[in-house]
Amino acid sequence: MMPSDRQPFFNLLADVYAFYRRDFSEFAGNVWWTAMRPYDFGAVQDAIGRHSVNPDTGQFMPMPADVVKMLQGSTQDSALVAWAKVDKGLRQVGPYESVVFDDAIIHRVLHDMGGWIAFAMKTDREWPFVAKEFENRYRGYRVRSETPDFPPVLVGITEDQNSQNERPSRPPVMIGDREKAKQVMLGGSDKLLVAFERMQPQDMTLLGHSSRPGA
Image (cartoon, rainbow, N blue to C red):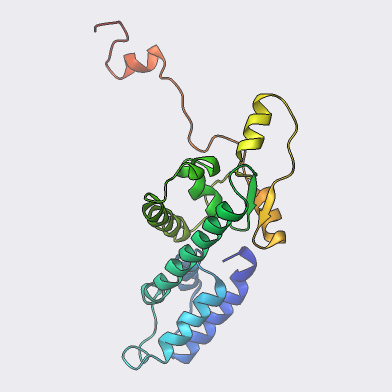
């Protein structure tokens, strides 16, 4: 959910607590908000509604864990939708073009898996395993409370070669909803998502190790 969903979400919770004749507190609201933030507001609203009409559990006040359990199918569905965009994008746009998807998590997952160009190197035999890995990684990021850092653009072969030769490149191809893709591009980070730094000799000394050869 977005910060703008907070008040509508609290209003929804107040109605749910009133429906079950329970007192609603700010503490309870904050617990719910932290637990539900990784999900879409509409999906949470739908899950609470489905819980209330469930003949086995609907008579009991829902807890965050109940709603998360109902939403797990939604995260899997989202991962499948995301993978379909990636698969179609690679087949129709190709690895030579740089691309921007309308989903920031797609960018982070593809970055973690080697990048847009690396996907073109996968064989048909590898593809089902690549899809499964993508879906698992995507779901892992989706259930987090905050969107992870992600690259603004997934660089293609042409831009990669042009940058090495200091030549300009064409703008990236937007995949999915154009306006959302623009927001992804604006919200991305050019910093290293995984930092690398050689340990200094003084650090080795503090750890009780010697940096001398053969020590």
